[in-house]
Figure (cartoon, rainbow, N blue to C red):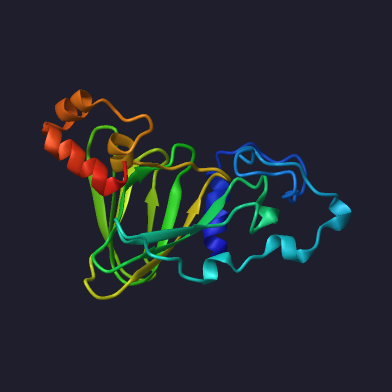
Length: 211
């Protein structure tokens, strides 16, 4: 994990901190205003607990639609990460399940597979697909802003990966919900022309994605 953090420090995209650290005052921070850091607590009140967390030690509940769960560090469970320009993520992927194509507009990502087997990949702006099969201990880089995915190729074993992202707020945009589960709803005519599908297809896909 220490190597991962060092690598992230070399590619960080967030503004550099102006002090040794800025432990988040979570009483003043909300999930809407933490994007570029929240106010610091008094440095005299900082202790070691602000720089440690067990958030990633437990598996999250696997989702029904795609069969995965992502658990993130944040200023609310790791206050010492405030203004440090990084996020850690635990990714649990059920057998034969997929972290569907998505992108992080503000961060590159380094993932290491800890358990199971994965097929991972990303698509560049020339629509070229790069894929790689990972075994435990293997790592893979997803460049910033590129659409990427992680697929558990094992039909019986759940996969576990750990990712580091080079932003305190990397953002995420899932490709399929962006097309079929927006609010307000994307006009049907646009969806039909874009994907060459009919009205029934649009309704069926929206329903399955919760749109």
